[in-house]
Length: 359
Image (cartoon, rainbow, N blue to C red; front, side):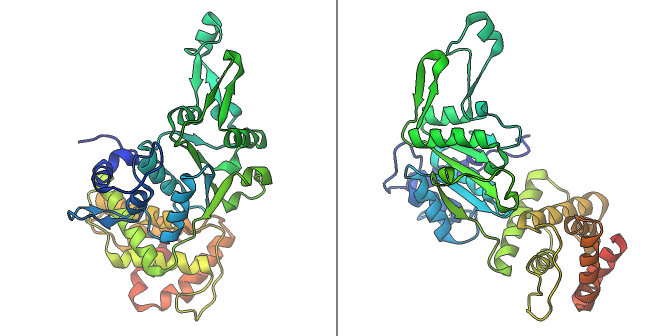
């Protein structure tokens, strides 16, 4: 049994990628493992002619995936933009896995990210003993992607300092990376491109210049359009999570998932699903990813401290923690919701009591 907690996409879904490649007779860009048609099928799911099922990795608008894939087939980079928890990193990983067969060329953007993360570094022991050489150079994921014609991924682009963003402008424009210490340059091979992610909660941190934005085609990943769509996403992901972690619990009842999703959507939108009651919204994003985390935590509690079946009491603590980020304002919002909405729903009595005990 594989002891890795979370495999890379190209490893976890290797069988699906292999089957798709066998049935993929469409034109494909240079150095792509699959055609744009097959990449779309991999992301959205389908059933092949031989009956093999490709599971959906992204549940949402097909047009967004088409635009993203088509962008990567051109010389423009792709920016996945949206609120936290809308599967930007997830989509980025699976796009890289399907296109390049390698999702590991990842640069994590932080305030401490410097230019070497995009360019290259040095093995200083060898640098001091041998001087500048190919052997002493430590290639960045970006340099490797350029050299091998693969996809580089840059997470949280608005978190990196402005000077690092400026370095990216040159890389995307010239498609070359100079190494003046060795008197050489690395020219990007066909198939090279960049997928960056950014969330709109980071506005004002390190906003992207217009020059940088022009190098990207932006695809905004929205929150799920419908209640049923979000329920389907959460159900699928928590089932995968339970299997991966081998939690000693049953698959959570659909009703528990629907209640958590309903609470998140109503508080997020500031109105009940039936449109009859306006609500105050808490300070957090209440994303689909957080709903998955709430149910996943409930599965762990039920498995290790309960009867193996997820009940309202098992999810109450994590649900409350997800909603209350500000201990004063968010608590008022949550208590008002519990007393005016949850309490009045006949089939929510157990959830109301469990959450009131925690709150």
